Figure (cartoon, helix red, strand yellow):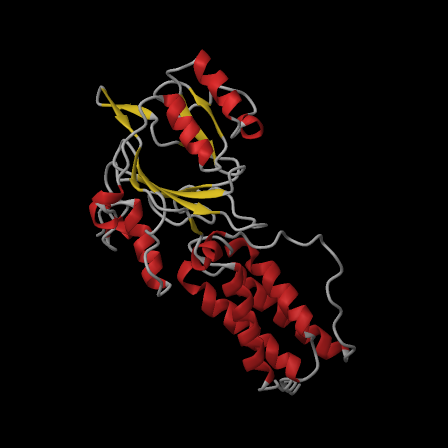
Length: 321
């Protein structure tokens, strides 16, 4: 799929700073908070680095005057950055990703962009990393709840496509790593302004709202004992179907459950709040797993309820004795 050469322009490649202190001052000049790393590594050389990272030239000069060979880090959170850390595959690519033609983290981002019917987000400040990867810098949306991710875990993008945000760091351009016995630098390959994070990427990476504190379950309307028992049994059955749904079955399980309980709403035997409460409680374990989002969950519940309430359900006849 895409290669770094196809996403960069040679005219935008900037020479590496001559010294590490120059690299630190250059990053600070862009408004990014920096601090020292141990030589050739990504290991912080100071404690409380996220709090102490700075753009102050005097502090930077003092740090690197003492340790001129230290690498430079950018503290992503305090700098207002989210960095896509896209790596080349090291070893076999997992089968599900290999079947999609993925060989690199950048292929995952291109694939997600195509699914969202959006352009591949390449037009931003970009750094080539020593082991064949790249860092794409983006502005973190103000007030966002986005956090760093690793691979496909949790809210992650997918194979070899990590993100670095609050609580994380990236090695700044001009830092070096030892690769096969040689020192290889982090090099700017697209020297353009840092772009805002695309809305579709922000949606994927934003975690669902934190669970509400356990409260009272929405009350059901007053009905006969027989109807109440029937409704409780329906709730339990639909919640069980949602909770046990497999990866490829979650959407239809949620929709079917919402539609089935929506039929009871059409009769006034249950409230919309109660339907949402019970299905969300059952489906919460799925949110953030294999691209199942909070938005998909709530939208599917809404659509299912709307379909079900148009077809009120009749209470089954009692069997003759």
